[in-house]
Length: 102
Image (cartoon, rainbow, N blue to C red; front, side):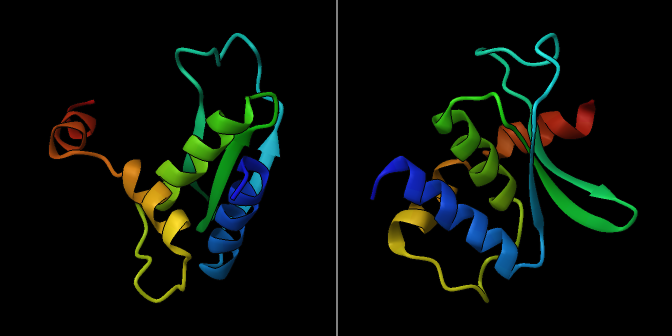
């Protein structure tokens, strides 16, 4: 599967969960190659995944997969490569613990 198709499959997984994926051009001062921005957020009670439209395709895939890794995917059919990609971005126990300290 090529990266473009993988990105589309990840967007489709979000849609199946009722989550909108929105690609917006982020302020370059807020995002760089070392710190890509975006991810899962909640606006007015609705979940949304924001992706930096200026980011590289691998960065956009990482943002989507990381956001989806925070969601319950048991009820959604995903191809093995899509499920593996999301699994690769699941936070480790140490990352989860640090996020609560912020």
